[in-house]
Structures are given as structure tokens and as C-alpha cells.
Image (cartoon, rainbow, N blue to C red; front, top):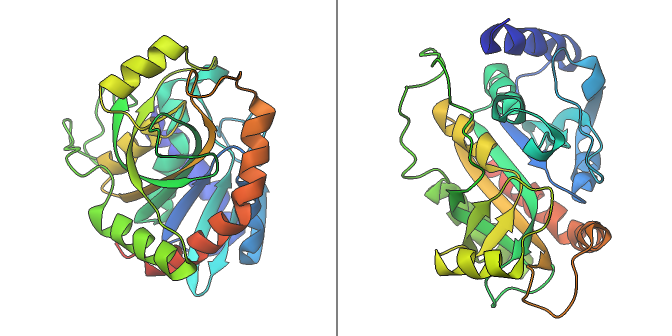
Amino acid sequence: MNQRMLADLAVAAIQAKIGMTPEAGVVLGSGLGAFADELRDAVTIDYHDIPHWPASTAIGHAGKLVAGYIGDAPIVVLSGRAHLYEGYTPQQAAFSTRVMSLLGAHSMVITNAAGGINLSYSQGTLVAIADHINLQGVNPLTGPNDDAWGPRFPDMTEAYSTAYRAIARNAAAVLGFQLPEGVYAALAGPNYETPAEIRYLRAIGADLVGMSTVPEVIVANHMGMRVLAISCVTNMAAGVLDQKIDHEEVLETGRQVRGRFTELLKVILPQLKG
């Protein structure tokens, strides 16, 4: 079956259980899954119960879709994502974004745990992504184009909505902290980068580095969705500090900032309009 047929089957299974049309989809990165508990009138679906949905195997990804409300805004939250390093294709890594759009969502809020390259960041800093550099070597739009989903050559000039970033900055200010912006470099993983690779990434203009997000953002733009992406700097990148990087550190930092992160999303989401 082609991607259209697979996505339609997933949409039908989800619609049968959630009984609402979401305005936005939210993807939660490593250690940030607690936000899903904030939804009112929540309905939870295990990924294994959605046809053709890729399972989340990464530590810190629950593998559940949760539909509910933040204020009066209907939201679908993905607690866990598919990564290239798990063996998924770029099309599978972005499958959830296709489904969110077909469910009716006009916006995507994508989050991740990232390594801090910019020396002005510290562990636990939240950063709004302003642009990205795709160094994963693949693209989810490779292959035949479905013109009903989007154009063959989609524009990426404003891959990350300027208006949504302004909403996010204002929300952070209301909550008493600053939300800097940065450029996210996406690599395939699963190994963390070498110090030499981090020096290279800094030289080409990257502020953050991670192993996700870009396939989802490309597909969201292809389907005409507006995107806000927020990174949590869970560790400083290789060579910035005189210490090795450990995934448990990534998860622990996510747990430490989840209160701030949750409050930020609760302020932002009701303001996102298509």
C-alpha cells in the first residue's frame, strides 16, 4: 500500500476513538512526555493499536497518542516519535505528521532534546528553533509526490513560523523567562557527535544538534501546516564541557525542566491559529 492508504487507515482508527478534530498536533521529545498528562478529557491510544504507526523504541518515549483539550483547544499529543536511528525510513519518521494533518490539525508543535552548541546556552535552556540544517542524508519527500498533500518542490523559507515564535517568546516572558532562538542541526545518530563534528556544526551556523524533528518539519510544511519547534538543551554538545555525554543525563534534564516546559505549552497552544 502507498503512504496515502496507510495514513488513511491510521486516521480512521484514531477518529473512531477520539471523537474530535484537533487544531494542533504536539510531538514530545525525550524526557518531555509529562505534558500529555495535562490534557483535559483525555483519550489515550497505544501506538500498537494504530494501523501502520511506527513503534517508539527509544528510551524516554512512551509510545502513546493522547487526545484532549488545553483550555478550549482540541489537541493531539504524541508521547514518543520514530527516529531514523531506530531503522525507520524518513517517510515512517514523518508518518505521524501526515496523520495529524489529515485529522484536521493546522499546526504542529514539535519538541526535542538537543545538545547545546551555542556557548550562551546552559543545560535546561529552552530554545525556539528558527531554522534548521538537514545533515541526516535523507528526505521524507523523496519518491513520487502526492499532489493532494503538497507541491513537488515546497518552499522552506519560513519552515518555522515567525508568528508562532513571537507567541512563544511572549508566553515565556509572561512566565518570567527568556526564550532564545537558534538553528538546529539534524544528524542521523544514534551516536552522539564527536568534538570535531561539533566544531564543524558551530562553524556552519548551528546552535543546537539532535537526531529528530527535521523529517516532521519538512512534511508539515509540505502539507501546509504551520510549525513551532522548541528544543530543550538537555546536555552541552561534545567538547563544550570536559565530560562525556550520557542519555540518562538527557532524560534527567528533561524531568527537571518539565514544569517550565509544560506551563509554556499551556500558554502557547490556545493561541495558535491556522
